[in-house]
Length: 303
Ligand code: 13P
Ligand code: SF4
Image (cartoon, rainbow, N blue to C red):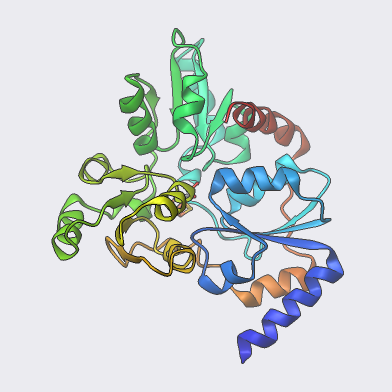
């Protein structure tokens, strides 16, 4: 009843403000349900470039809303809870990256999209978990490459491409908690079910899985797979979308405590308040935004 009242208020405010709601696949079920578009980081970045509405309400973590603002400087981008950060993105600062670049003169700098605008502004190329392999294949092989901040995604792509990158010790605390033992236990409980994990998982977890995919990749896999049961090693918010889109299939989390607290900060209440108050707004320094946009545009041009 309560949800119904808030939902209709959000719908009314959305049309009054000429707004669209974009939500990441890890958002709360009720937030995904009211969103106009749900996707992974790459799909959301692409969608942000196509928005015609005046206002984007971004339900995800800060770097995602910041990416939408960088790609679409003429739009107002709102984030329902501005404290929804990504701890991994905060594991490297612009200053630390500048120091690393100084130690590797001539190297190309690549950042995972899970990074601050200041870090992106220092980079030649951005990648997401959905396109990293393809984007890295577009870079010259004779240049040294710095890849920040996620050491797990970087090692995963380096292994797949037979390359070596200069790494940074960043990681996702949510995916870090997954273990190969938990995967073995899930396999024993659900024999024959394929195991999907996210590339932010540690190597022993990636090695124990059948597929290592972005959240969008997991949704696509689930749609096309003939498997009736699938084991999923990532943030459990994705289960809502997987189950909604595939009612004939059963999805098992590797570990149901795989939660990103920041992804859960968006609620229907603060989403409604953001639309009502037109705040908090995501504002990026224009000079940093212009430099960061070059790295994101370079990525979108090849993937
Ligand atoms: P995706 O781009 O795969 O959705 O990943 C985003 C993220 O933050 C994963 O932790
Ligand atoms: Fe960041 Fe990990 Fe949360 Fe994704 S799941 S937003 S990488 S902390």
